[in-house]
Image (cartoon, rainbow, N blue to C red; front, side, top):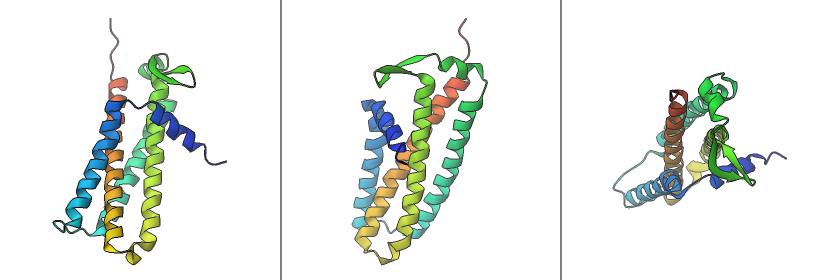
Length: 172
């Protein structure tokens, strides 16, 4: 019980293609590794608590926005949203092609879970960050940098998809 969100995360990964995986995962990890290498060599001094505080605010705003979009998707009577419920994609889950609507719901639902996990992790780390060594703080900084970039890139992709669906005009 209470682990059903893992099924959604699995669905998200099943719908990833290499190009999307590179955009949403490889780039953030490389940026996080770059941040670690720059901070470990002391070329960049970080104020960890300011970074965490800013990230919490950012993720909180993004979480609210993502929940709003899910609400719009599930309650709207927009004809474009009704049309995407009928459009099948090439993505297959559980031996069936999924609709564009379901793909959008999977992506936004995963985003909400990622944001919530990110916020939870920030709060947990804040409890003991003062007692960690500088190296551990840098590892947290690098991990959270990757996570925030991942969430931002996923948000950009989802907003773009949402915009293109909502503003799509009928072809005559």
